[in-house]
Image 1: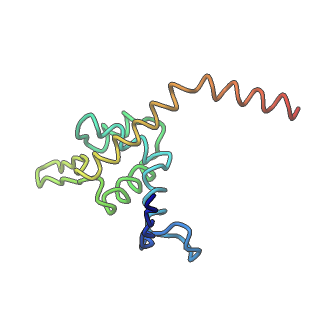
Image 2: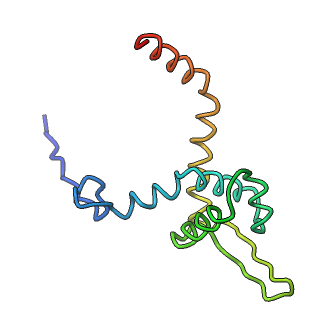
Length: 132
């Protein structure tokens, strides 16, 4: 019987467990899974938005936080900002191909969370009862 050798994979240059501070991939994961990052990505899956439209669609987000979130996601290559030189100025936000890819993943996680919330709630109640 032949024994196959497992060739060790080279460590990723973005290893989260390297112990040397915040790995770049962890930062992107934070940006994508942040409270507002998740909502922006999911909303932009449907269509492009102007800033004020996006703010209304998300709800309860300050102008400052939405601006910061959009800038961060734009820097990460996930959101495209299209500023048109018209009067009054018009800026539209949409997802890049990379952004669409991650937004689909985030939406799947959000859907799972919504679908399994009853189970989570039962687990919380059992936990609290056992501790209480």
